[in-house]
Length: 569
Figure 1 (cartoon, helix red, strand yellow):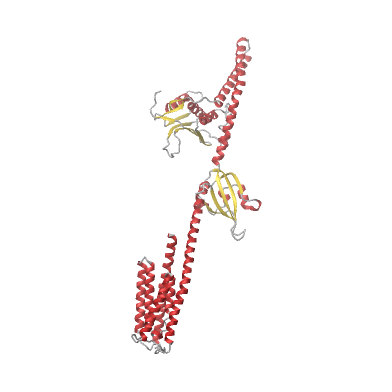
Figure 2 (figure 1 turned 90 degrees about the vertical axis):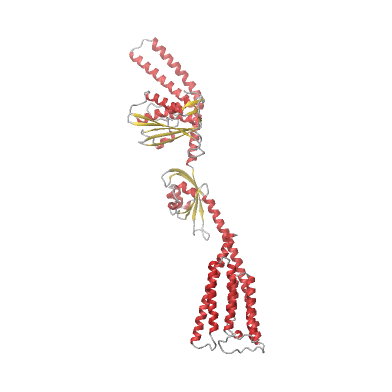
């Protein structure tokens, strides 16, 4: 309602200002006309009273202007102006002949102006005021109390014949008639304007509500013209597109999301049935690869199918969902392999043990020439190798249950580094850097599992750098709920980064698969075991790699930190 009142006040302010301007224009025109008549000698009577009335009218106009600028009550300003107009017109009638004056019609303009700026009842009050002033002037003239100034010839109106009373009655009737008609029209116009103002406010609120819904949608949304050029986009759409609204507007939608099927749909829409769903991988405007899914609907014109036609596109980034599905599939695959492991180990390990024992007995009991003896040594070595593979597989598929204890994580990392430097995999050309181990950090964890995870990652990093010089960086950090985001769980963040040859992008998704390896003598269970341990403990692992620059593994394990350990190792 405040908006409606504000709109009506602005309308009234405009009307008052318009009447003020018209009043000055009419007065100025009257003055010019009077001067022209005076120059031609057409006024036989004195001109001074008329000049005084006109000067007073200009003075009152100045007062009206000051009230307009400084008075906040517009109804009062309008009422004062109407009262002044009644007196000015009365003065003009007196100065131009009284009942003989041709200016009695000016009261009609005052009544019409009143209907524009004041309520309907004010029109009747002004009509009554005009009748009183006009009747009073005529009565005073009739009883010779007041002698009007005659600008023209002497009066020919005879009061005895009744013609004078006829003129009075005719004027008064015209005043009330105009007040009635003008009041009705102004009242209806005011009601229509109030209704329009109310409808306009409802429309603006509806538009704002719709914009608010669109801007706060979780899914991205943009509209296009019939050529596919984007005409509007919401905030979620900007985030998904990887650019701002100013850069997106005007571009073709298939330039923002370069999906071949989207370009084909925009170019040849007649071949598709709408709404149409599309999905695919594309490179968004900031260069990031995403998997997007969108639904496209037609936006028809109101008058015809061709006029104003365009499209409404609702889209969503499904990259995280697709990655989640891949992880679930990977987990199901690992679970299936785990279920097979017990039977596989039983079927393979027992024959291996029998085979190895039989060969050793024959090697000791048979006199063999050097060639056969060497073949038996090879057979024993390969048997041991097969046994090691089966053992690694069992460690992957059937990891031991968590045996949590109080673990000094900083000391654990240093122990693994010492063992790594004394292993056959370590090369002197590799420099190992440690970060975050200067602080004593205790937590409830499985010592053996963390050692195995760190050992496998360090071994892979060193092997990835080969014989070239490189750096293996191990960073240890404790993440608390107060860091960056209160939603983050508390736990251990372990990062292992190497400067090796890197991993090709197409292999990133498969490095945790069992038996996947790029090494000549590798089994492909090291990273699979790491993933299994982290998954079993409810943690996460992320990999970033760049060919020729290296690889970085970031592992988060939700552990419980101990501020005061009960035992010191």
